[in-house]
Image 1 (tube, one colour):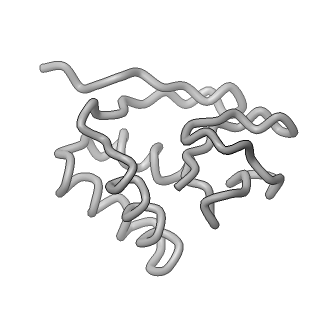
Image 2: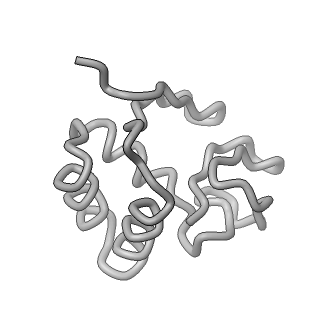
Length: 96
């Protein structure tokens, strides 16, 4: 079974699979849930909505920008791309 597109963070070297069915709306909902209710809610949401493996959902939530616009690791402002590597610390981020 194909799990999706392979994504890797240059900073932590974690690799995970991003489902091809991921949409900006799903990413935004996962980001908002994670910011308001904590990472477990985002993981459960991604697994239930997209059928993701636990490890992939966990890695994806770990790399969600906490406010949608700043790096999850160092807090620097991120460019407008949805998927971006922070120029300051080299961490992969999902902007939502």
